[in-house]
Length: 512
Image 1 (cartoon, rainbow, N blue to C red):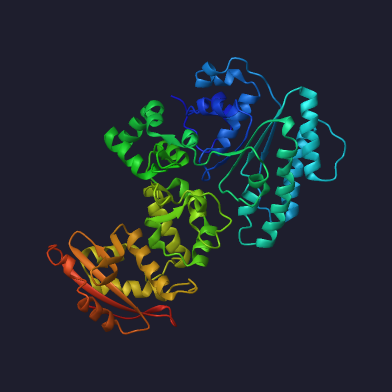
Image 2 (image 1 turned 180 degrees about the vertical axis):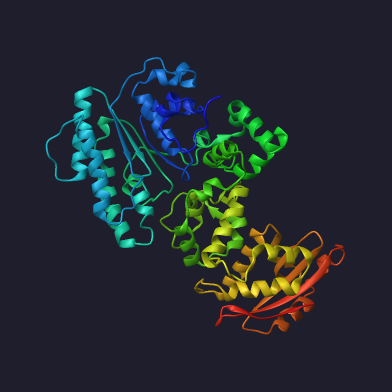
């Protein structure tokens, strides 16, 4: 059996060292044989670097590395082209100089093969190298750019620095248009699409395939590919976990599948999470653990976005395809970063509905959001598992005491809407514990703030900010919020909670 590739991004290394390669070369061939400038947005660790590395190997004419792939049947000529491969990973870009130094070093490496006269600017050196490579080899140049947006995302909360880096990017990528006669193909990848970069406004033959159904599965792993190439590993994992192979497939699907990059595309598995799970033979949130999206949390806080809405978010295609407006909404960044995915599309309203893709994200992201505001300490009075036990046992007094203790320990700053803050906290706690929670449930006479259901109990919450808890309880009665559950059979609890915006604590609660 071949080895499972966990974190390996070089195509030639996969083939040379006998790792599994999920064959995407048919799509690679279609891309490679059309003169264009492509852009592809995908979440981190989703296979973008491997896609570029495969293109690099193909344009290097490395026929021996494609034995057994679809490319072997499709390609007959195997011509070697000059390839300029830029990679912006591995740096934090704390200044414009950091960015310029990174780009300059990569241009210097290319200049070792295609010498050019001294040039003052990065863009003029790039243009001179394109011309030199064309003249030396007699062939057009292939330009590959990996994680072009890393310098921008690293400074998403430093608008001046980000804008300065943006200007450097603009002058550099303008050369893709100016030197078009020397370029056979350009392929740029990133997590996000910053539309203000001239790459997207000045390059007249740009082909953004991020939401193109023909290339929706160019990164990631489909159900068909999973069965075709990974069946033996599923058997090993199912034996290790004392499950049937069908049960193992279902659990892998629940944890790691669910991504859609077009409303009509196949479901796609997160490749890093899937391969790591098969390698370790455990179901865990590997992808989420491999990187902490703190910038996303800051943006959600800044936008005062309710976490409850992450279960179902509506947006337009224009909004979804760029992140320049992230100050207005974090949704594009959440989608492009992989924490939301396409659930459906309404062609009449021309709106997408987004949701969290799978168990890994729906479990890990709320946990991270909660811990971001409520870091646990060894002696914290809030014990999350005891809290869960109290909820399951219907011990309202005890779990409300723990809930009050949690807010008392909070380090989270309330920005703007304090009522939204308390609603978010309540939602996240029950969500991460695996309980069914429905926020702002509509009734004939209003909206219930929260309904939590367990096997034996239903808890109906009404929250008030700086008002008596008894007033919250009276609202439950006056608006007959309990009526929809009267014939359910489970024991019902009404809980009125008063929050204090001044102390950021539960001021009082009443249970009936």
